Structures are given as C-alpha cells and as structure tokens.
Length: 150
Image (cartoon, rainbow, N blue to C red):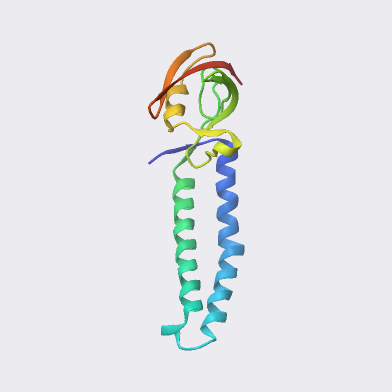
C-alpha cells in the first residue's frame, strides 16, 4: 500500500532504520549474550527480556522497511491548495494556530504536525485560503477558517 511522506519525514524513517540496524541491534545482541552467560535459560528473566527486545526491534525494522519501500514523496505542486507538506495558519474556534500537514507516521500534535488522514487533516486537504467550515470534535462543533497556506 502506497504511503505518502514529506521528504523530511522519509529521511527520518531512513535514519531511524539505520540506527536500529546498526547501533540498537548491537546493544541487544550484547544484552542477550550477557544474559545467556548467567546460565539456565528457562528461568533466566534477563535473557527472556533481551529476547523480547530483539523481537520488538525486528518488528520495528520490518515496519520501517515496508514503509520506506512503499513510500512516495509528496512535494507541493505550486497550487494554493492544502496538500501534504503544507504549512498552514488557521483560525480554530477563534484561536489562531499554525500546523503542518504531514503523513500519519510524521504526525505529532505537540509539534503542530497533523496527519492528512486525521479527521481535521481530511477536511483541510485540497482547501484554499479563506475557506471556512465546521469541524465536529466529539459533541462540539468548531468553526475553522483557513487564513494562510505556505
């Protein structure tokens, strides 16, 4: 399944994959070896914990490799419409807020990065500056106005 990323978001995934395959893998292999040295692997909690960490590491590596292999970089096409990678300023329930619209794996609300697949992101994609709409957040309707698209 195709996954859309900004150039920066894809690079972060590649950097994480490199770190996990080189540094983190070596750390966990060392933990397994140290724990195995204690003997009796059936009742060795440190060994089982290290093996679990290796399993999680392998799963994350597989996820990253899949995402990278399926990645399509979306660059802004020069239109005045909101798209992946757009930085926007909106009036959200009367309060001015800045966001960047990104891929789901890049989303981080604490850094004002919202996914294009989130409920708000889906409403924003393809819209132009000046557009107003109501956004349903739980039981509350919030008025949203797009002020600027960069």
